[in-house]
Length: 183
Image 1 (cartoon, one colour):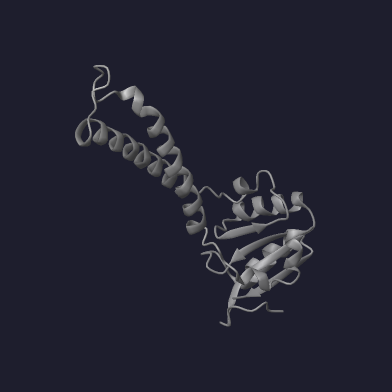
Image 2: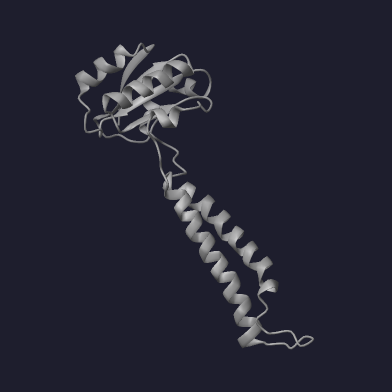
């Protein structure tokens, strides 16, 4: 059953359906040990250790956030320094124009502002969101992924992917069903 969207023929992935989080976690560990690298898991709630089992370690969003935070602190400090010392210097009680302690609150707040906005934008952009359609939605029974079922998908673009061998491997993990999902 297709839920609309892509009409291109071909296989997207092989998907195994499990009834418990423990089975999914064990299957993910065996899949990584077997050498599959383009793998994804779907569950109705976070499963502790699943990202480690899938060897998923993405650091793009944190690097975007730290860079934006540094830019924000530079922007906040430079803006205050320029206005206080060059553009509109005010002599208040003989204090120096470039009074660093007075610059800290705005510098801190601009760091937080730039970091928070970048975290939101980069999370959406790097995750490809919003995505109203995905080929995984064609998996039989996938609507249960938000209720009580757990799915493990090995995508066709995996270098080790071979339809027959991958299907035999997934069936050896003891799933309820293994489905070939069209793109």
